[in-house]
Length: 351
Image (cartoon, rainbow, N blue to C red; front, side, top):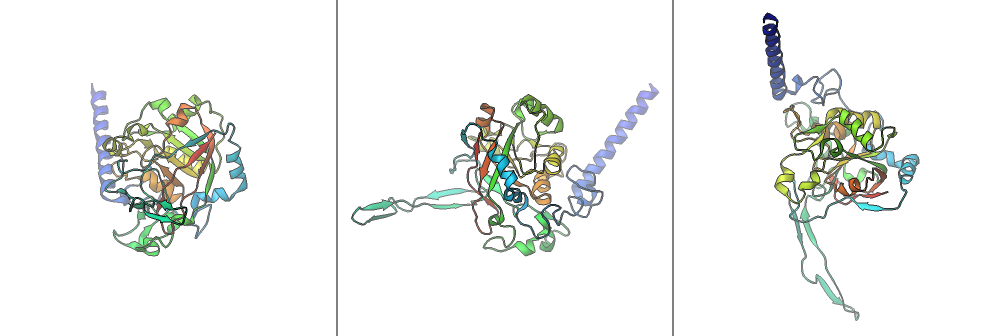
């Protein structure tokens, strides 16, 4: 009986210690040492150690992981994945009823019908469109490296709001487009794509849950890929079947499943991926992150801000899963919008 009481007391004390540390982290990022999103053993920033200059691409780089696609061997590996010549459009249609984050809108108008003409003796007429939206952050979208950063230092200090490779908001800011890290700095992507279908282990995943490295190993085994050799520059596409809610914006936007931080570290440190993508609006982040209330899109910060790995969101991946198309060429070129934070457009897979 005494031993049971002692064990129970230790459990209570341990639980209180964890709760106290959790509360401290929620109040002050300097108290978050040891959290999954923190690197190193110092708290120089809310993500731990300083992340600039980039260890691979060096000081001043603005292309991040898309630098892999300037390497012929990476592009050749991608094209070598084509066996059948079957294509897949991985983007959803854009329209005003699609799920949108926060108060973002998609507003398309045809100025007149027809907009112009007739002209010439062939009497040509034509239509134009006017589109008002956050063009890089709507529907199937691609995050550039100027999209998310970290407040280092006092709130509101723009000289210490740091993005990829240490660029600051002070350097980047302009009402007419980012002065650094604009989407036009990225290179076209021709990657070997790999679908990782977490539904094989979890079934349809729910919001606020994440897949870990054990899950990843089981999925690869079930996909017949236990011996698969991942390589630098690969595009990793995560399927949670959140796509099932695409036609129901409130359900789609309630939160998301995602990957756990141990998988994010594998992506960045072991694979050195060129692209991460998924069928949710953050692609990688569980919302909320399980049992870590202080984590706000910390997988995004880890992959994009620290490692410069670009992200493609809101993809239609069921078609690949249905065909068991696990390896393919993944092709996408961000629209070179000078100073843009992201890009619209549908990537394609070629099996």
